Image 1: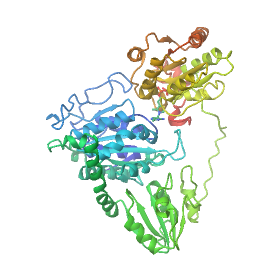
Image 2: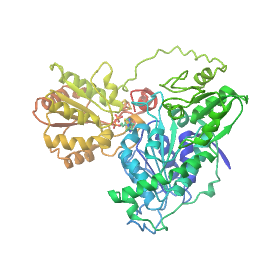
Image 3: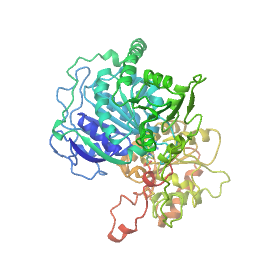
Image 4: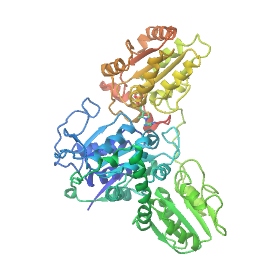
Length: 586
Ligand SMILES: Cc1ncc(C[n+]2csc(CCOP(=O)(O)OP(=O)(O)O)c2C)c(N)n1
Ligand code: SF4
């Protein structure tokens, strides 16, 4: 065993590498981004776990063309007999969006290899379609989906709890309470996935994903490629036409008792029966409980690590206790199920539903201790002397110059409708621009602009980043082109996925123009948002607004954080990348 100081995300990554994955798939999103990035680093030989002893055929920077890791040149040729040639290394490449990432991982699993797919919580909304159906098809090589929830919305547009998705799909959910469990559970999740032939969902939360602790990991030389491709696969299991889907849904129902039995006896679930107050805790909240109650052994305690819920253990605890306190980060998932609509006669429940724990936001050790009536050392925030300020675009950001021009170009219109999307440019909602009137979900700016234009609104303009465009903006643009909708689309091509830490983008520069041509946009207008071009940019926008029909413009200028810096400029770059440090939603 070797001990390493790891983020929760990195512990999952190492667990996956040590479980013998053949591939990692993801689309960036805080707080899950580092899972993929750590696997990518391992795959490139920067960390441990490279299957071929650290061979690295790729030497370019991460944000460069050609993508990162040592990649497989072999792809499965046909099902059910996958390629006899195992891939030479871990395949690790960002996907266009979370749905694509999930499907790529599923394909790898069908081909008999272990695959991990990771995303932030809202990413699972995008990937929900293949996720739900993969519970019916089942898997071949182990398939583990890691979803990082963001209670408290540190860098997200909403707060949602992925355990509901696990229950909805009827697949097992593992919820680590610390970094060691993140590592151990990931390895176990692959084993279990292959045993029950289902995808396994691992749920993390921001606080665990982004904090470090020592993790004891397996020795480097224990890692070996897992390969299920020799077994005969049954293609009809994976072909969800109604007759097969009905059969497969029955199979999913039939396997549920096995999942429940596993949850009851899982080493990640622990129970202690003691006093008449019972505490049920899961995930990171279990740590907060341990911190609050310390070494005392008066309370009865059930730690839940695996779902579906261990009904037998919960029954024992409820029978034994008069008062049950449920402590969980996220929605009151356990509490709702335990309490039901009508409660349990003679038993008192406490938690998020009945108080004193808050229904929204993130739990903290202080909140949990106060809820349990335990003393907690008061912490005094350090005196920094700093005044709080709204998040801002970096000084010199290309998006700022586009928004300035947009504000001037629309100044003569009484009611311009300015849809936008998710990225650094969401900060255009703040003064001095106030040029973002909506941000809902990735790609929505184009579809909403189309809807508004068909309602007769004018001018209708949407701003969308290059990565968000290839994530979910291309599909609605096809409809807008077909209808020649009276609207203006401005694609903000800054050559990177800036908000989540400058990952490589799918289509920038000429590639983006080629994509637009392919979607039916004949003559996209390109401009360079620079202060010296301001008047010209304003007139390009005015012309587009005056045009009765669809105009597609590309604001092409690289994010200043990825441009090579001249020495003095280096110290002058003070911007935080929004997804990591600001909070406009990521
Ligand atoms: C479904 C979903 N997946 C991922 C994210 C995280 N995320 C927010 S914006 C963004 C992309 C930003 O890139 P781009 O559109 O090119 O704009 P930039 O930040 O470069 O200006 C990502 C990946 C999210 N908010 N929602
Ligand atoms: S990171 Fe780049 S895109 Fe984001 S605000 Fe700064 S300069 Fe603009």
